[in-house]
Amino acid sequence: MIVLIFCIASGFLLSNLLFYRETEETAAKEILSSFSSSGEDPSAEGNDVEEDARPKVMYTDIKGSVKEPGIYSFSSEERVYDVLKRAGGLLEEADSDRINFSAKIEDQQVLYIPAVGEELPEHLDQLASSEGKQPTADSEPPKININTATPSELQQIPGIGSVKAQEIIRFREENGSFQKVEDLQEISGIGEKTVEKLKNFVTIK
Image 1 (cartoon, rainbow, N blue to C red):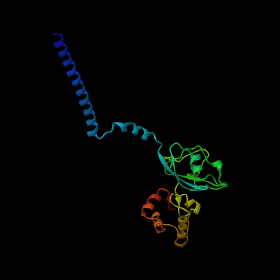
Image 2: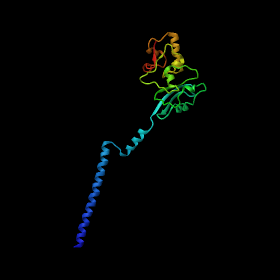
Image 3: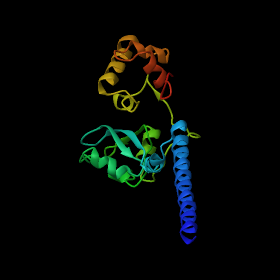
Image 4: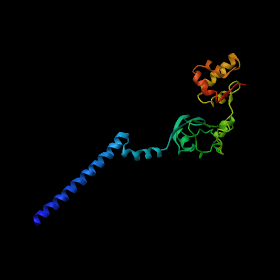
């Protein structure tokens, strides 16, 4: 009699154990299936947080009295001082008193380093100001008049280097003043798309 009761109890416990394990496996399969159908990877959730925390990579165009002018990448955590180091540092004639080395810079910004005694257009003087002033959307920087600008002033226009600046001067000397901004297409290397971008920085007077 005791043996019979023991067998019945053992069978009952064994069946419950098998049922519990089967239920766990079914639940696990359903969870994995739901991730698969939705295209989600549970292990990738933490990676999204890490990627969002990474500093954004931006670019600035460094001109003027630096050893290696050009376009440099930087993170949102870096300052003017960091980017100037990457450009090889300042030349001897650079006016360091007009530079705010601790200022933050923005993506696609032109950073012009003036020489001692050099006069700059107002918007560039703001970029190099020791007070760290930056032009805002509410105070749009003045446009450069391509009919009167000097070669150095023309080079402050994004995309205009020393060669194109000289060609613009030569065009004025040979053909007179520009009648409209679109006339810049007469300059070698300046096309319709470039002119559209330059309209934000130049004017005709």
